[in-house]
Image (cartoon, rainbow, N blue to C red; front, side, top):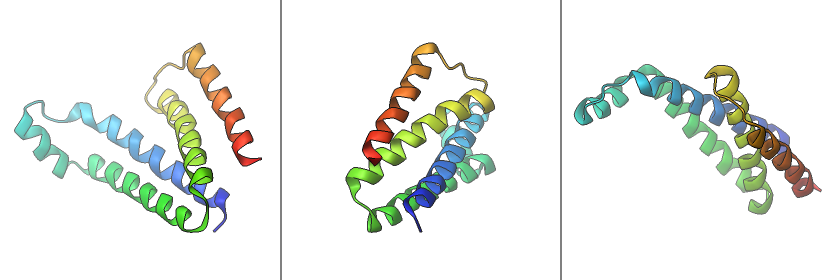
Length: 115
């Protein structure tokens, strides 16, 4: 598997998992005992957690083939950009000017890391 394929897989899995988790958490019971019980039985939380765990597995598989100094910044940078964009489109969160500038700077940083 190429580094690009690992990166895309990681970003899709982690972003989807985080978006599912964020969307489902407000629907859980607010009492401490009920909250943890709901976590274990809520299908969206389980799906989000599973996707996020699979993204970590993808990270480990990529580390077997590529340098940490390449994989980590690439995955984290692409993941951050995907989460911000996904949160804007799926969760209706606002992308402020500073976040937009941050995404551009991270993109430029990733270009430098890959050079």
